[in-house]
Length: 432
Image (cartoon, rainbow, N blue to C red; front, side):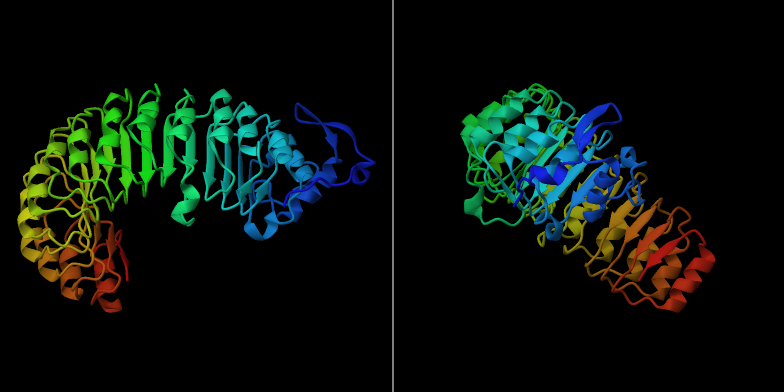
C-alpha cells in the first residue's frame, strides 16, 4: 500500500531546481538514493545527484511495490525527463497519482495487477504530456474513474485489458464506461478485455473522430453490437480476439469497412464465412488462427487485392486444396500455417509464388520434399519447427540464396547438417 511518509523525515529539505522544475523535497543525492532503492537507473548507470536528468524510464516490480509510498511518487513526478512509468501489483493512491500528474514529461503510465484508490485513475488525466495509459488487471475502476480522462489533452492510447482476472472482475466495462471513453476525442488506440456491451456502447466508440486501432478480447459481444463500427471514420486495425459469441455474421459487418488494413480474428469462430473479406480493397494483414477456417475460405482470400500477410494456423480443416488456391495470389508475402492438414504436395504448389518471402509450416506433416520444392523461391525466412526435415532437406535449403533464417527446432537435422549448411550458405542461420 502507498502511504505518506512523516514530514519530519524531510526537515532538511530545501527548494532546489531539477532541470526547469522546482521541487520542495529531498536533496538531489537523497533522491538518487531513493531511486537506487527501487533499482532505478539512469541509462544503465547508478543514479547520482549529477545524472537525475538521465532517468527516463521507471519500472517498479511487484516485490518492490510494497515499499512504495506517496513521497516516492512525488520524487518520480519531479524527474525532468521521465517519459515512462510502470507499476506492478501496486496500490496507487490518489495522492500518488496527483504527484505524478505534476510530471513535465511523462508520456506512458502503466499499472499491472494492482489496485487504484478512488480518484487515482482520473488524476492521471492532469498529466499534460500523457500519450499512453495502461491499466491491466486492475481493481477499482469504474465509469466515474474513466470520465476525467476526457480532459487529458494528449491521450492517444488506452489499454483496459485483463490477462488473468476472472471474468466477473471485468464486468465494469459496460455501455456506461464506453460512453465515457467516447468522450476522449484524442483517442487513437483502444484495448478492452471482457466487455459486456451492446451496440449502444460501440456507437460511442465509432463516433471517436481519430480512432484507428481497436482491440476487443474475450468479449460477450453479439454480432449486432459491432454494426456501429461501420461508421468509424478512421478505423484501420481491428482485433476481435477469442470473442466466442461472434459468428460469421460479423464478417458481413467487417466487409462494409473499406478502410480496414489489418484484421485479427484469433480464436473467434468465424470460419466458413470469410469470403466477403476478399473484397476489402485496403486489407493487408489477416489473422484467422484457431478460427475454424476452411479450404473454401482460403480460396476466396487468394483474390484479396492488397493482402500481403495471412496467418491461419491451428485450423484442422485446412488442407492442400486451400493452400494450393493461395498460389494464385499476386500479393502474399507472409504465410503462417502451423498445425493444419497441409502436406508436401500442397506446399509445392506455393513454392513458386514470386512475392513470398516469409513462410511458417511448423508442426505439419511435411519435410524434405517441401525443402526441395522451395528451391528457386525468394524466401528470406522459413519456419519448419517440429516437421520431418532432415540434413538432406537442409542441404536443399542451402540452395536458396535469399534465405537467411531457418527455424528447425524439434526436427531430424544434426549438428553435422547445420555445419554443412553454414559452409554452403555462410550468411544463413539455423535454430535447432
